[in-house]
Length: 492
Image (cartoon, rainbow, N blue to C red; front, side, top):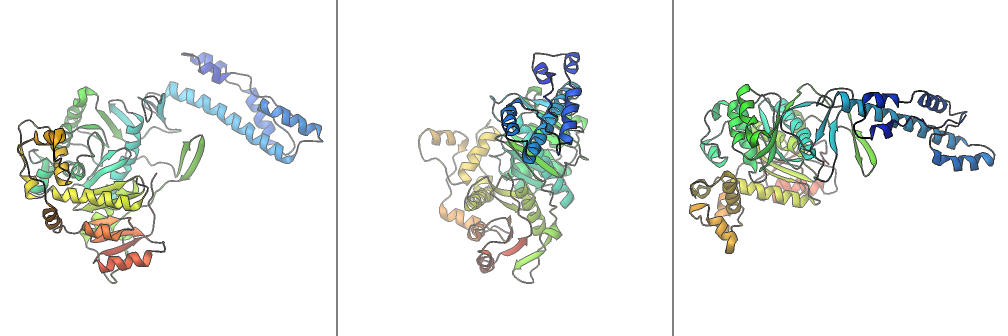
């Protein structure tokens, strides 16, 4: 039996401008699809043709004595792929028509770049795990949200404290839990003037997350583990941010955030109960790949129970907490990735570098810069009146990263922020201050020397390379507790 392709031009019909539902449904083929499926089902004794491009090779084979089993198998596969594609086109049209208001599908402003249109996000068989309350998301916004939300959800589940993350370009710039803030931390994180901060663990979590790397957090996507209160909303309201996702908002918080960016600030309400399917699918360059979702659970007690060196060592609870934060963060950083954490927050993240040592150096450099922000000179900078928060963050980063401009218009741009221009730190001053650093949790690196120079006292990383014993021996010589992780956490 030879069956021809469906004759009803459904795809051509819906490709026209504004087709009606009646026009679309009139062109849904029933009989042709049924014949193809019936023939393909019996392909052990039936040859089914669904693609006219196969006619010449079929005729050649037929004239040569008969159609082989291999060809029948191939034709059957193509027939089922053809009918599946046809059904998919119908489902997509109905989804767009009946559930395209954000229930199962949402239109995006554009793709990764403005010229990549059209762009959309959708889900099959259930509702989207988020609802847009304000603004219009773009493709990268959704990518950030779908990584940032599980990060804070996992931190809250692992540690039982409100969690926050600041995401940029599909990697966390910072992440933290809502531990109380010291006066110095409040000043460094630019929240010392925020009323009600001490009563809001969520606001303290975001202050820490944003304070991990204020320069990288500029224009971030925020994910929060708990219902957003007014204090947290007021904090977010004065920062430059592109959007937020959370499991709920008080009426006052929603009112505050809805006014941000002239009413265009992106606000998403997340479905706490949603669990993604166990298999992930993505298409790159026309090729579809599938893998099991990375559903590994990271917990303070279970994940860090195998101590490689020193023998019989114990890891205190604060270190286990920070190791958990750093490791969960690494799980959602673009690989290669390295993360430093201290006192309930990330203080240095290095992501997306081809060389792991460059990730280590990047994370260590950010960690050093974070520590220099607590130096007395940094805490007591004399700002000119009216200097904006982003300009302060940029000037502080230049000072604490030891890259203060020497001359020219860049130097003038630096000096215009201050009533009293600060003196750059000398190498001796930096070395003396950074020597005061305490325990730092640090997963996933081969370069123990760099970690040690930046104050790491605990390293958690998977073993399995030829250099394992050398790495462990180096950690022991440097007084670092090395904890073996059982699971690699690459993320792409």
